[in-house]
View 1 (cartoon, rainbow over the protein chains, first blue to last red):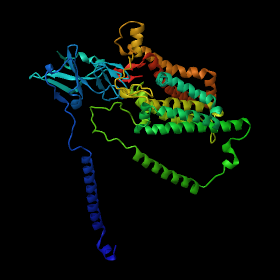
View 2 (view 1 turned 180 degrees about the vertical axis):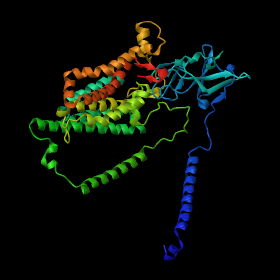
View 3 (view 1 turned 180 degrees about the horizontal axis):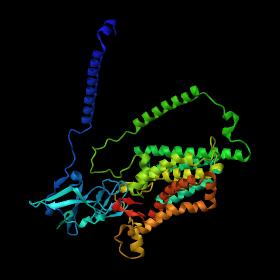
View 4 (view 1 turned 45 degrees about the vertical axis):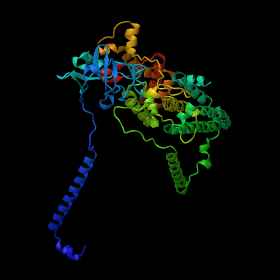
Length: 167
Length: 358
């Protein structure tokens, strides 16, 4: 710093320069941080809808239907006069079981938990049956599955009227 | 022959075999820890492994890119276990003869400069490891798979190789136990070893005779529980986490008849032939009683034995009880595995309503 500049710059001016500089620096940092924060969110969200229409009850055969499994993570199961929407999340550690049509069971590839067609656990470490989602019939006669409401067997919620559709 | 090996590899037979071999190895460590034994077992096992590798199913599992680290791990662990026993046997023979252990000899107590002795070794190892990793990365390429899909899981879905022991533990436990409680107990237990075990013997030199219990306990947890479970999880678990022998084809449709039952169901339905009580606590009371006995009654009983009294005398009450609780945590794993294999027992306490299962 030259002698001349030293003479011109008094204490008050120094502080105003410092404030401007500091505010600019803070603003730049905040801008960068907000950009970085925005960057961590996806531009397009491929999350499946929590509610969906699953056609008519007559679309389903007796047994397990896998048509909504890849899109919404739901098995439609029609058994013993009931149609219900079964969650495809293993109750042991949250893996995705497979439906084995030959053995008539759901089998988890992570730790070997097995479930009957009804979703009741019978082998492996799974502590409780698969969860069922709320299911209802709209005024147009279509099935509506609501994944925000779950019904758990061990809490006796499978008798709840909106946990299944009688067919 | 292959049929017999497949049959023997089933956990219910291979786990006791492995445990018995482990204890035999430690009992006869002076025989195992000789160069002659090492050469003979190498001469026996090398042709045997070549014969194993001639099998298409075996070689396929062995050369699966994910499993290469486990092959390296098995070889290094076998070698280092032998090396330890060799050094222990050498020192114990010297101590028996009234000599100092090898590490205590004056020529071995000489100090050297870290520069260049240590730094050169480290530099060499850095270069060697880098070359090794690059060559490995070139030979075994990482697979490029389809985009991630939250509604689909690969079959079998395997954890990274270092977590396969934990994943195998999860087959026998609730995720809270095998995923959180037991790993924390393992880590805390390992951290606590120097505070619980204040015995100065064996510091700075190899010995087995002076530290029999400590070494046996640690090596049991390490080799028989952890390494054995990694080997089972890596090589012997196929689609749907079903067990497959080392020479068995991974048939997706292999069905293993299994029907797992909770202790409460055994107790109320099988023994008393009554429906399950609706009260949760009453329903699980047999399991709760067994767990309380296991955790609260066994430590004082061990403390009252001659063996326990000796430890209390040496290290004090608090150290003894922490030690016994850690050992009980460790032994709960083989106990639950054996109960599962023999009685299809799932949970001793099953309270899925409270997300609590033991």
